[in-house]
Amino acid sequence: MHTITLGQARLTLLRDGTFWMDGGGLFGLVPRTLWVRQAPPDDLNRVEMALNCLLIEADGQCILVETGMGAKLSEREAGFFSLKRDGGLTARLAELGRSPADVDLVINTHLHNDHAGGNTTLVDGQAVPTFPRATYCVQRREWADALFPDERTRATYLSDNLQPIAGQVRLLAGDERLTPSVRCVVTRGHTLAHQSVLIESDGQRALFVGDLGPFAVHMERLAWITAFDTEPLETLETKRAIVRLALEDDLLLILDHDPRVPWGRLRERDGKLTFESATSNQ
Image (cartoon, rainbow, N blue to C red; front, side):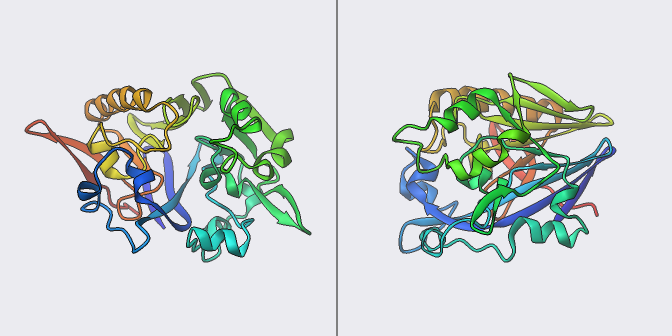
């Protein structure tokens, strides 16, 4: 686990695990000869991806961004992804002396299974909310799209991640502030209502970008967009705006899937963007 203090907020990376996904899906139109330099694949052409979640302790609240894949997958399903969890998100919380009941807010950037699978857990074979006290915050349009998936999305929008938490969901209508330090901002492209999470404290700012930029290289290179994005041209323009903001405001960017560089800052030198990894300060 890694922790950074941002003003009065404490940010801790919690990893639900790692999994392997087809490199062509992660890098879309980018030729394999280019992306293999950034993420060496295995013999099945898969690249390792992290399930990075973020614990925000701010404004007297315990706020969790993303819940990873969770523990509901069958052995066969987990094997398909070569999923490794080592106790997963709840074990990482326990290492901090926290339990699921301590979480006040859960924010899902979107509801794909690798971001919302840990929303629920199995008890006696039934899916129930993992975080019994928490309000789950998601964009209204994302919730609707997840409840009524199409042929392209039904394999990742899973009812067991959604229906059990319906009574605890807060549906957001665009950009909304959840606490004095935490705002959700719509970053459309990966899905129609994908959101990122902005943390602001004492003049310092950080942005959990979600699947706007899964790896550091996706933020360095505007044209590198996943094949999973619903609106790739929207992703392009959203990334352009976020990159500009990151350079102007020295934003700490937090990445959801990069197994090696989970957070850092963009720098521009001679017209080229580079992502500089941040180090924990605690």
